[in-house]
Length: 440
Image (cartoon, rainbow, N blue to C red; front, side, top):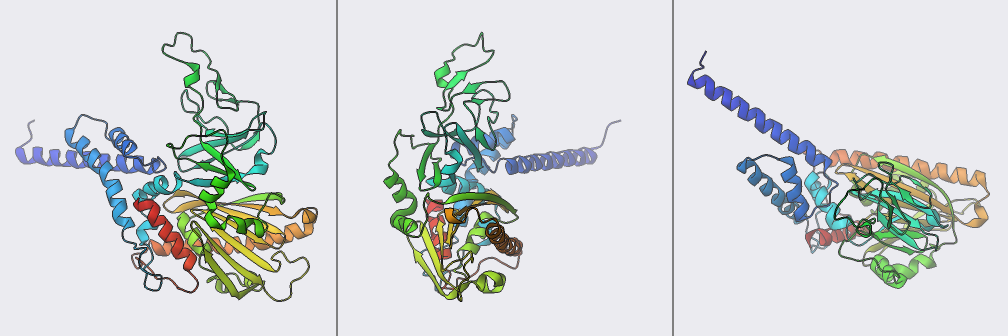
């Protein structure tokens, strides 16, 4: 039976509609899985050609257009915030900074794949053959110490078929791929490639692990993902301190941030909020403390809160509250340092804890807490347990705040907000640094 013209046009329209729906759905689903890819012009073009893999010229043109538009749209969103406006008159960044998937992908490239990033601590690689692994954006990394004591870092990806080599932390004399058994030394060199007889144009020297620039400062291990920066055998610690901490570096040592502390434990929190929401909460100058952390507030003199701004660092400090008990975890002074873009160091009483906010998506992050303690307290189990319980209570309170803020940001009722000039200077500084990274 032959269909008439109107039926043919209708079926063609429906088919075209289904194809468009399938194309868009496929692209959206694939883009969501690719949000952690580094956003370069080349990878954007490659990504969209993979998404729309057919011979349709219009589809290919659309892919190119979307690829170029990501960067353009992200820049438009960035410019909705103006860092030149003084804090007294300034508007906060728009909600799209905290919700837009393409902005998040753009942000990974501009913020996290440049400059020094804290990823761990030296005690994790204290002995030869120690290693630890992690992930930042789409970068899977492994940091290790070889038999000669040299620290190295690599992309944790086998050069054969891209399997991850290791997970977690531990001790090893080499990295052996669990997939096909390719084996690498702790210097990254490919030692063994199994069952490759008959392969042409292959040099084992060309298939070592891809290195990442690594350095240490105090108790911390730092990585620099910038592909344009080559790893040197010897990295000047003073230069690293200058790049990472700027003129504030001496203040950390003066406030007890050093390698003499004993590592205690790690706690991890998956939070349903953009990573910047967590940072904003940290940077409000204690504004929320009397309302959300009544237990913590009783141990601090909130009127003494001060904020100092440096190049890429802001430091908040406060005196202890009323007469301190001998075993009070907060001590007589609290030192809260934020190191751009996502690392926080808290020194109080005999304790130091660090908070690393790792972005996992536009509305999800992982915050890693590592706890350190002065050696004289390391055997006081009751004090340690009590202190960690108090800290856990504060984290649960902050998580509720941050997840509530994320929901509010996603509401149509909110677009931008304002700053409280006397207390939120560090937050405004953070947003200005983000702007500089994102726009350049």
